[in-house]
Image (cartoon, rainbow, N blue to C red; front, side, top):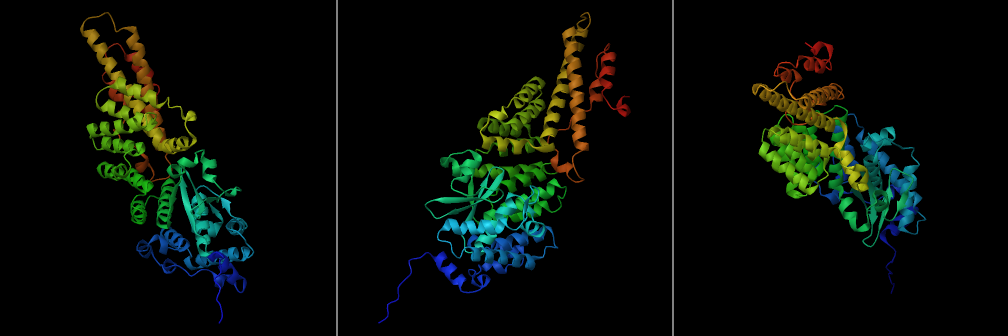
Length: 470
């Protein structure tokens, strides 16, 4: 009687043993059902376990660029996976097998480019960012039989292997390579905060993140066409994709602030402690003329994060709508005193992302210009009242303040106009403009200047471009 002995070796070791006996590419693991997907609709019907990450990422890339050579790039992934299997033939541990993956992919001559987040671009042009590189590691690792996951951290993504008892991280875009607890070292948070700051994603969630990142990159380059439809795909893949909801709200806030507010509210329904989402709701409600709702939302944002600079600026806009220029100026001052350098590094990254670009500048100069001009209007009314009481000339202190607020209001109006005129390629301006009331023309303030202030008006007019000084 023969005795069949069961091997105690892990399944991946047996797989490598089979691979040694023939062509590595023919010994790759059995493809998952998603390997045969030919369109995005087919992807949406698959579970995370059935998705082939590489195939799915290439299909999403083809949605952006119809010229993507899907089959050729798909074969390239197979070739890379076969090289990993060949390189891991003598691996005696999971670390060595993971190192084979790292060695193969780092030998391909790929370069980092923070603007390129698509897998097809990385395979075709050898450039990509942490999103593209992490997708590559996932795709090749999956086809080589490695069970990898991704971690989504503030302003970064990386890859993780875990066997239930420990985790090995792979930093796909630097020389760090394999490292236990890499996320903690990169972002300075402790292991007890790992789940908070570095979310583990399954295949559908990761592809949703890649898709929303691709939409963001296209928007930055002025290609906003189809962005809402593409974000719908991201949300179909992962309904809780916060970034997709935020982008959708920002895209809608100019043309449809009510719909934009609903998109942002979808975030706080899931996470009521999201101060950024509450601030965006406040901005959208302001754009819709709902001052009371805007006040409620901005107060919620500041209750969660009292150092939220954008929320303080929005609070200034709300104060202006409520008729308090002085309170608006106080809010602006608070927004400018946020000690960013003292923040936790993770929070610093979040603040930088929140405050980045033309969008924050528009909101800031809007608030400053409107607040200073509103305060100038109040001062002129006080000067008028003093004249009605037959006081001997307006008090000198009020004149000095009036001059300051008029000049400051005009300068910030011009600054906002400059940002608008230099806001990137055509098509980007409408979605970057905050959904808040427009800054009044300084000429409207000049019309109400009390008698005897013509010289002050001329001095402030001199700040205007020549064609606007009449």
